Image (tube, rainbow, N blue to C red; front, top):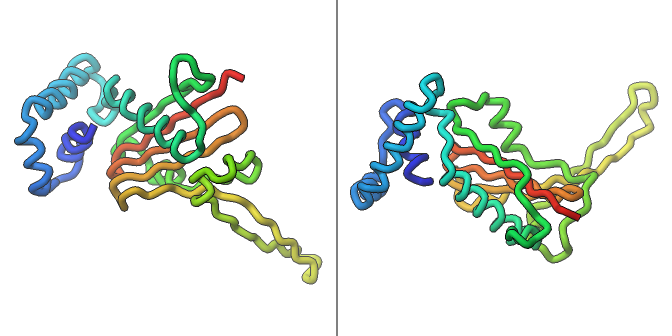
Length: 195
């Protein structure tokens, strides 16, 4: 997946300067770099009206599903994704930065309000990312009447700034896992429960 992102970033950013590490990876694995480029070219020839930014690939989806299920298990102690398990992938979506509006990216990167959901299992790592916000509301008519409202928000787990982050939320019988790679690939995964 790294090769796909780097290849697309080279096409998107004018004068994109790959660092020495990136160039070393491309030269160290030329057949993989060529395969990624061939896959992108094949996608464009099979979909002549499509943009390179709409590139879809089964391998990318497989990696995203593996990452998402790993994060769900690690953070929430839920979602052991196997053929015999009660959790299954209901939806997977991903997009690259060039096709997303600023508002969509901002919305994607916003912490998620979990005030109406059951909290994750006590002791799970997800508790480290829960933030409590308190709002004070005051009526225009009654200056003395101040109402305080608390809400719970699940924040992102930042693995490496601007390189990799994810968020996991358990909502009713669904798990949402958002993944952001290199601030260029944005993925949403929804796991549902068979119960």
